[in-house]
Image (tube, rainbow, N blue to C red; front, side, top):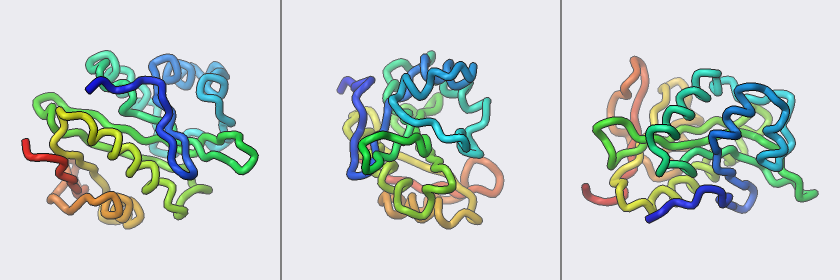
Length: 180
């Protein structure tokens, strides 16, 4: 299946915008074009606390190594009642070397939009999108046990506890898509 690059994934309240290298370079260089590129209002509290500069470099490297995965990473925009979109977070997926049938997802929503089910809504939409890729047999996510809201997102998306995570102190959750 060929993944669509630029099409937004639209839910009831969200529009998930495919991140491109141009967008990442704009954000990394803080050139003021990101809002225009994604047709969103960029809030003053952007980026999320865990969206550190190394994340931009990681995503650029992922796109260079896996151009077929463009569309796996998305900016999350909230569609306001006036029809304008406000950037509220990011989510994405990636595979690791040696595990092409498994992808890991991650998500981050800005504080004013937390506890409204938006991370779950976005993650479910991304999982639905990724489940159409026949190469994937499972989706995983990691979190810290001290972050119950993050764990609840994984559980609401149908993921189940799958043991200790790869980083010290983390746990892993998994969703089986199909037998590998």
